[in-house]
Length: 137
Image 1: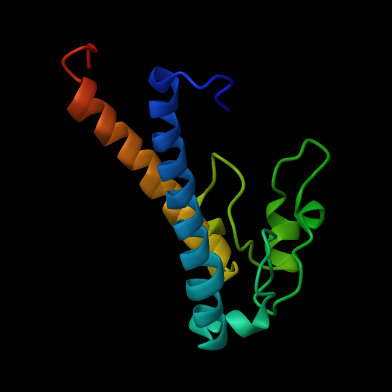
Image 2: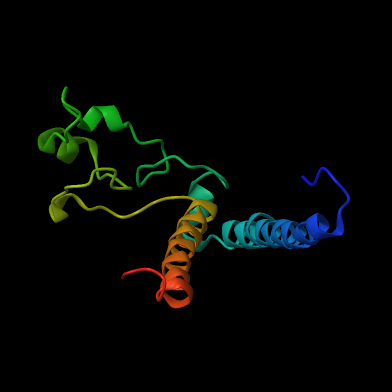
């Protein structure tokens, strides 16, 4: 927040307001338009899951008990994994592709993931294009 009324300081307020409006428009589009539209159109069988959640689910739509498939060292137990069911979001870094199951998450969580990956890619590309000469890439 600007703590004085010098016109040299007030010029930065315009950019802060533009960023806040940009965030508001993105939120309205995602939370008030895209998410209800995807939920009520039953995209990806969304009605089997809550409309907004950041948890992982079984293929039946119930919460996935992660501790049921982990051993005491917090590594995946293959036999328990095969008995309990498929993991819907892979949370481990080094995984075998035989463990992959269908990804089940709420539409708003899926779109948030997509937007986050797009934002990371945009930052990297922007840095390379606009500051590539100043940095040693």
